[in-house]
Length: 559
Image (cartoon, rainbow, N blue to C red):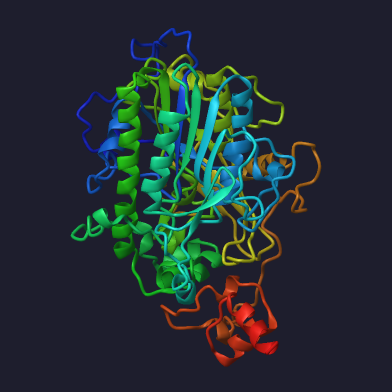
């Protein structure tokens, strides 16, 4: 990824070490005890969404984690979408092999989640928070001794999203606690933290190593801060990327789908089908992060109070990035830097150095192998990534680290059809992006010279000899583990294709009239609800529809 520059950093109050050689800081403390792990996973947190990178942000506990550990500015995800990325973290496999390719109820059949291997070598394991895969089930999964989760995306507050007539009946959102549904009591970040703390205090024996997987809903859209943090950034002006202002030259430089997406759910011109601006949204987005920062502080303080801190690795990570206007887009899914780059900070006293920035490429694919090496468990044959402990600890210098190509895959979703199937490869400083099943241009960027991906080099003769090897390497990388054709059948791309059009001929077609609406409608989720006769009837009449109306309609028809 884009190389990290110290000038970007807000002063941390400690010496920033960039050497990856052996040092006293990198010396591993010898201990007979297996190291505990607390893995804190964010949702949709942008790669630079931490106080030591943005002086406007108040994240003292995340900043402290960086002071006592290692920051990885080149952390990336191989699929920038909740379910596929989480599945990759849990299985050590890419989407093309674990087959959870979108957010629409992919099956988990046959998958083994890495905490199971940690259990096998004596670890106590607990999962708390967002799971978001596998037929919308919130039930306990194999590999975890303790389970607290919720269906789908979950809710920030107990009454969020509950229809009025059900609120009147006392219904609130639910959590699944070890297979039993209980009412959500409060703000989701706080409640998940309380469950995790109770597990550490009451269920984990002091002489047993543990793996705590705390998977936050925050800061996923529509981000809602805890009441104590509302208005925290009311007077803060957050700066958007320069590419948020799209010029005519930018439009020519980018694929058509990027330009068209600007006026859509995932574009700055029609932000989640509202008239909200990204500048305003970021005030809530980052205020929502504050409860997570407090949660992290509580966990670390508990470790110190109980004498566990010196023997525990704490990992702060995100399932994908988040675009805040980059190229006129919001959200994630695509292969641009703001989408694929994620925050990663790790503290492990005695094992990892303190206050260091490590520029090694780290993928979500590499998380499971790293945790298993730390636990002393054997790496399973199906794992596709590799442990980054050697380069993180300084045992292997980055110059000697065999850094793999970064290969990215995203598969088109019917529910959000504005982003096409996307494949990309990064080798050294070059990133090549191609799109499958859509009539559009490819992209090539030199990230060292152009970190914001403003200048598409796909037709630059100076890069021509490097393009075909990247195309071939990308295709070879996308083959499934069994060597078969890719799950989305296609052959290697060797050229641009037949894209010629008559200059004064027919222009591009407009979008359908019924897609053109005003912002802030109450029926914005209609396109996600399964089609039924009642829904179609309501749509044609321009009336509101929600799935719960189906039951009322059936009751009326039987009277």
